[in-house]
Image 1 (tube, helix red, strand yellow):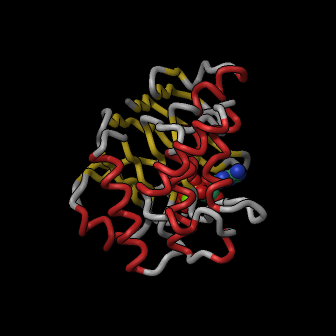
Image 2: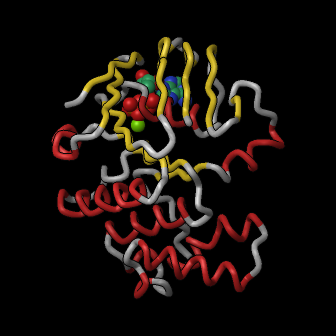
Length: 220
Ligand SMILES: Nc1ncnc2c1ncn2[C@@H]1O[C@H](COP(=O)(O)OP(=O)(O)O)[C@@H](O)[C@H]1O
Ligand SMILES: [Mg+2]
């Protein structure tokens, strides 16, 4: 469960990136976060994944109070979430399988169990035959699927994706959205930021819209 209460984020300037944000996402929900560039979507996701602190207000995610979280607790919290970015952020000198294995290696899983889990998740995203390929030899859609595989390999309850289809053509974007919907159907809470209204309209999911740091709820 994700809950924001009266969340404000002000950057030096000052820029009021989030203003009195209230939202609640239940376990297993699929929710879109829309809004034009500069609306505050990435800021909201950074707060939600404990990459930055709010100026005021409270955020509860998976039982953690992110306004009170201690440095040493952050890695423990991150195991509960998976994060996908627009620009994939794959390591160029590692194969797809090696990239996907990273969260499990950090966690200290045994090599055998890492191998088994990586194979399973690559099957799930349809990348079995790309396991030993370097990212640069994969298409944009394949690279984004690898980034999603890496975000879910440790089986987080919550998947946050910030403009995951921003660099993809419309057909690949639909494929990625299909994959995110399947993950949700399997029990993962999925929260996706996008400024692509057409894509959102076709999916008929719950939509939270940000405009100048303020939230409005509705179905597009
Ligand atoms: N690190 C930062 N320092 C100062 N201003 C920032 C920073 N990050 C974002 N902003 C500002 O906050 C506002 C919201 O940005 P952002 O969350 O990136 O929006 P979106 O993801 O919807 O495009 C913008 O006005 C942006 O310029
Ligand atoms: Mg953004």
